[in-house]
Image (tube, rainbow, N blue to C red; front, side, top):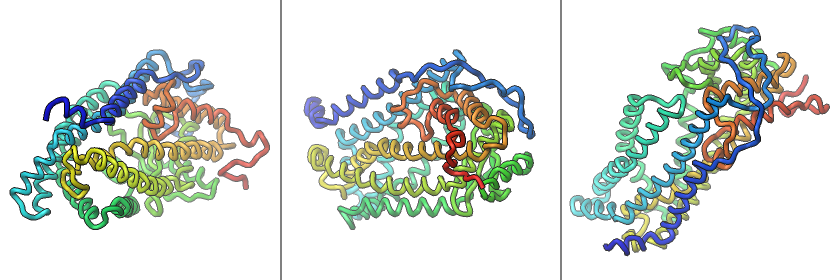
Length: 455
């Protein structure tokens, strides 16, 4: 095939790739700033022992960073945004390259000459595709790791990355052919409904695994009561204010796997497997009042069953976007199937086309799920403020200080772009969270709180 005809086979896809390239530049380097805020800093704090620290008495009126920290945060933010959109573009381009060069068609022809059965052909075509695909993505992954190690706090070192990449590659070499064979079996059985069976099966397995998984277990997790029994008692007392009972073993501590990791805490699981996990570096860097808000925020996730709701919401959204990916694959097949040498979706040559279709819809699915989780984080912030109301002198200030410390430690940029943020993060920006926290006061308006009702 000549170079000219090769370019024509892409048609509008070449325009789509150009638009994606422009989007990378736009979101990576033209993040529009938010409003300007006055400067404030938060000191690193000693380990929590139960008293309020006077070193945290500085007022926080907005999220702002010292000049040097802001420069680092801006560089990190731009790189993360750039790498995200670059990754989407790069994966899309690799799959289009596969289709344009008809590599899988050559793999299929060779497999059909060696094996008479479709099962035998699958173990010739699919592993070779996976190996080639992973090798083509390797330069991108090395570049992402290089940038992460240099600009993103908490990024694992190169040794950890090599082991992680090797494990993913080997496990994928085993699991991907099995998954692909299942997909092609579903396509053969139900050419129009395979996407639904696939989505339902995947979500059922996901829910079963998550419901049976002991969240917060492993070498880096241990019961918080072993080192901080007073904090466990404090968390249980806070939860009891809303008639929530949290067993001691459901409150865990995670050791700081990476010294530079920012402070963190989270709630996970559902049913009897619900957990609240506090990171050791959060305990080391927050004072008693700030830790009260962090704990109350996680109690909010625990009390409002946010992890379970997120799983259910993600399941529905995943099936919806499974349908979108299926329709896009059908459209691609009708539009370019003959040019790419793909007779139908049952043929092995459709493998990169299917990946291309679902790669295209995955970022939009992520936006929908992130938007839902943003709402959950806002609810947890409001719940946390309501739960600690009346237990400490200035709950809103303590909450703002906690987020200020989190932002400084994690190098969160204070002039981020909301459009880019919805792609990049499952949490609202700290700028907006502190705005909400400092203005949240339903009691002053004579109304009942949203979540923790006065009894």
